[in-house]
Length: 293
Image 1 (cartoon, helix red, strand yellow):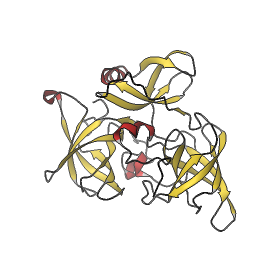
Image 2 (cartoon, one colour):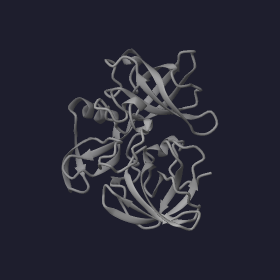
Image 3 (spheres, helix red, strand yellow):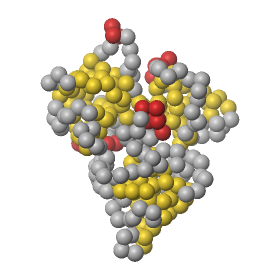
Image 4 (cartoon, one colour):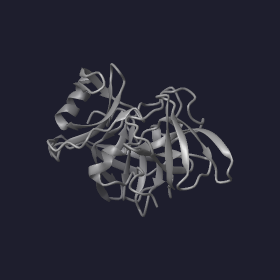
C-alpha cells in the first residue's frame, strides 16, 4: 500500500494535475535487498512535486535511501523508498520514492501552487513547455486558452524561468535522451505496442480532458484522459473492458450539439485496484482526431 507522498494514478480529481504519467530517464544507485550495490538505468512512470513512481528491476526495501540522477537535467538527489506498487502501470516492478532534499524542479517540471482565483469548472490540466528555455510546467488552463493553444499551436504566457512572456507548446510524455531506457516496448507511452518504436509513432501529450467512454455493450462512464495523441489516448476507468473491445469516446466538455463520438479499440489494459484499470485505446478511423477537442 502506497502512502500519500507517492504518486497514485487514482488520486482525487483535484490532485490529478500533480501526478502526470511522464517518463524521465534516470540513473538509480543504491543497495539491493541482498546488500550489494547496484546501478540501474531506468525511467519514471509518473511524477509529482516531491516524488515519483519509478520502474526498478533491482529489489529494494521500504525506508532504503537511493541516489537518483535525472539524466535529462543532469542533477542528482537522495530519495527514500516508500513502497513497492501492488500493480505495475508499465512493464516491470515499480516503486514509490520521495525526495529527501529541498530540490525544486528536480524533474524539470514546475508544479505551481494552487490558485484560488481559477474557476472550478472548465479547467484543463496540461503539460506545457517554454519554447525559449524548455522548462516544463503542469499548468491549469481555462478552456478558451486550451482551444487557442490547439488552434494556433502555441500559447503566450509568462515564463517563471525566463522572467518574460514566451510562447508555450504542449509537452510530450516521451523520453528525449537517446538510449536512456531499456529497449523494451512500453504501451503506456505509445499509441499502441506495435507503434512503440516505429517511424509512425505518434507524439503523446499530457492533457487531462473529460472523456465519456461508452462500451459497445452499453455501459458508460465519464472520466479524464491521462495523455492523448491524434491516434489514441490513455485513461483510467471502472468499466470492465478487455483488449480488442470496441468503445465509443466523446472527448472534451462541449455543448451536446457540438459533441463528436469516435470509435476506438482497447489496445492494452493495466489493472489498478478493484475493478479500476488504466486503458490505452487506438482510434479506429485515423481521420477522427482526439487531440484537437
